[in-house]
Length: 285
Image (cartoon, rainbow, N blue to C red; front, top):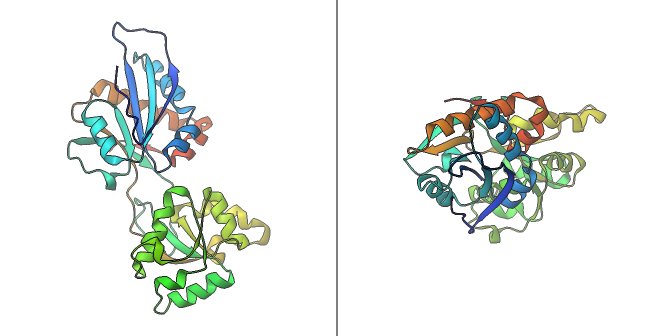
C-alpha cells in the first residue's frame, strides 16, 4: 500500500476492483496542475477509463489512484520513492535526471502567423483586443512602453496562464504584480476568446495553436481571431507535456499504462477527457 501525500496534493479514488491478486496492486498516477483540485474534479472519469483498458490488456490490479499537485519537487520524489507509478508534467519543469520520459503528448499543430513556426511547440502569447484601451496599449507597445501602461487594463487568462501576465509585465520593467494595477480575470479558454471579442477584456493570454478551435465565435460577424485580435508578445515555446516514470519503474506496468492512454486517445467518445487534459493524442518517444 502506497503512502498518500497530503501537502499540496489532491487525491481522487474512483476505480477499485475486488481483490484479484495475492498482494494488493495499487496504481498511482499524478498530474501537475496549478489548479489541482479542479483538475481532479474534472477528471473523475479518467481512472475508470484507464482501468477498463488495463483489464483489456490483461494487467491485474486492485485500485487506480489519481493525484494532482502543483509541487514539482513532490511529484519527482513520489516517482523516485515509488509512491507514484506515472507522472504527467511539462518536460521543461523536470529537474531530476533519474526520470524516464515514456510518452509524448500530441497537440493540434496549428500555428499563428506571428507565432513560432516549429510545429513541435506549444506557444502562449499576449494579444490585444479591438477595445479602445486594447488598441491604445497596442500603439504604446509599438513604441517604448513601460509596465505602468498596463494600469487600468482588463486582462483575461485561464487559471494556469495567470503567471504569464506577470512575466509580460516583467518584460516591461515590473518587478512584481504589485507594480501594476490591472483587472485580472481567470475563466475557461473559450470564455477568454469570447471576452476578447465582446470587449470585456483589453488583453488576453491565449494559446497560439488553439485559435482555429475558437474561430466559430466570430462566425456571426464573418470575423476571425486573425482579424480581430493582434499578437503583441509571444512567449518562448513550451514543450509538450510528457509521461514520466522512475528508472526503477515496473516496465510491465509502464508499458501497460502507455498502451492504455494510447487506446483511450483513439476512442472518439473520450475526447472530453482528453480536452480537459489539453491532449490531442500520444506518441511514443
